[in-house]
Image 1 (cartoon, helix red, strand yellow):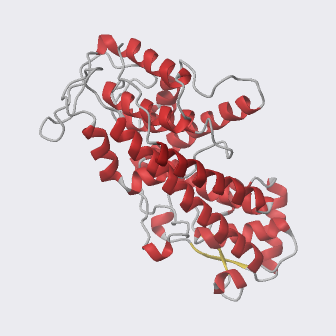
Image 2 (cartoon, rainbow, N blue to C red; image 1 turned 180 degrees about the horizontal axis):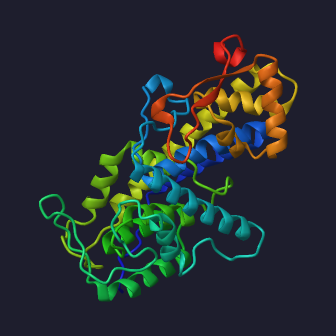
Length: 362
């Protein structure tokens, strides 16, 4: 066998994981459709930033239910990483939708690792050629003083990745376990010149949501970014053999870490759904689209009209809603902080909720 064994996760961890995700699915199912739209728009940003590994804004424990604001002062490389991660997420989201419609049998396909790499690295975020969408043909490795683990030779990579994808697709194990195992295995193989972490995280999404009512694990990757040290420690604990040896590699520590992180992420997402419900009820407007815009702007700490398109409203309707809220004094234009301007969103002004509105007073 050219890939590590796929160990079982502790039953207690899996039970907690299932309960947390069932609770999140129930909260989303009971929420108004507008709340679900706002949650999806805001949590998608968190997920994409985590997939790109643009370090998240961390809040104090007392603010656990809040949506952290978008990262400010992004470098050009970080902007390109986020754009690539957004494209990769759209690809996975489309495949997941086709699977739900019965048009595809699985989100994961043999070509998925290379497709994801092409999307993640296609904009060349590092400024170095990384052969987007192609497996490496040269040796790779970390600085030995930091991580002495030795990855397999380039000649072995394609066959190993094929075996790993087949195992993750077909093994009789929960999706979260198969997704974590695939992430661990891909990080051990290191099949690409660069972007291995982003591809491995995206693959965990492709596999991990197979058993989830929500259709996606909204919170796990955010937790991987927040607890980065634990993520690295769990990976390296399974690589203590020092070299790619399928019989000696141990995916169990990383699987335990990933299941726990997914459970924590689901709990945080449930708290955020409850927060959005509270803000929704406090908005004091009759129109559902107006409520959605007010809550999204307030929970974002300010948003441009372009960013609010993520709510899914037709552009003409969104423009009408914004004009009505501005006319009634519920929204106002404010100078956008310089740190939140970027090449992809250069707007100098954004919308904020006025201080007199109920959501702003909260």
